[in-house]
Image: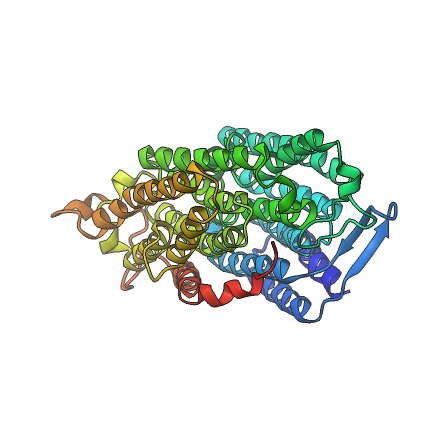
Length: 492
């Protein structure tokens, strides 16, 4: 029952605390902090002692079951880190926002939904948990309730619903041609005697499933919601959306292809080649759009399209090395991109800065925040010893050794171009921030001069300590990534 408790507790906490704080008019930060810590403790206990559990069965094949394997444990750990860091950061950021209790209610509900995604034992369970994640994060995008926020939230919702319908099509055919039991098993569960002669329709269903679940991960052509939704949401919500909610799409694709369909069934087919092509288009498109964008949060949103598609490219290689590179990319991108969005939020909170051209000299006023932005940017650009280096190294090696002809070479070229563009749209912020030229920092107006008086940093510790923690995680992935990836050996 530990698994169910770890899912239900944050959902109930969000609802109960929303009711309490709405009626009392208090912010309840201490209670939210206690709730997130208890949720983390339950999640850790679940990792070590959680037993598989089945809620109910609709048929011998269709069950709502939860079980936590190594893959689920790792995604759950990353989720815990991001939700905890973003929560404590939000105590400062959200105090100037309206409807705090509502924000935190959906914050905790989405956390519970994401834990359910990590713990799901089959495609039916993960599908419904995946949809609950969507429904609970749309209000985070809508939070400001401006016309732009409503439009962004609806766009996110419509894209997600469309992707979910495509994914459901894939699940339907999976269960039709699966064996006696449909649970997550490395290598897949398809019954090859049933699939014989039906490969064309199955290939189409699988491809649509990849596109559908890849919508949350920003896979072309279903990527349009990211640059609209990410910039409009409050910074803690943007950090979660890009840092871990998009990764739920990656996890579901892994479960669908590697644990349900089986890589051997589509290796060498048009499904694999089209998937690879779409991933490379996403990488280049996202990088080029980010390079041209001046709004920092929108630039980071386009960057997410590119960086998450690195993981999709690795998965599309359908090899053990490709999977390992994808997982390393998830491990480093989640804390790095969350850190970048929180840095952008700190600039907005303190000085109202959104345009990168306005940030010249910001390093003199916010040195810790800008250093954290720089370290996270190093990881995204693939500079050692950060996690982005080891993930890109593994992806390039995996691509070169696939034997897929020209694509084996095109993949690394695309990754190299994207890495250069990443450096081009992130490092100028650091350079101009620390070395702006004489008097440039004086152009930054201070709406609250008393807040940062006498402090090395212009924002409270509660904002910059989570940034340091996220940078540390990205560094740990870079140093120990080779050892961590041993956990996932033998999946393909």
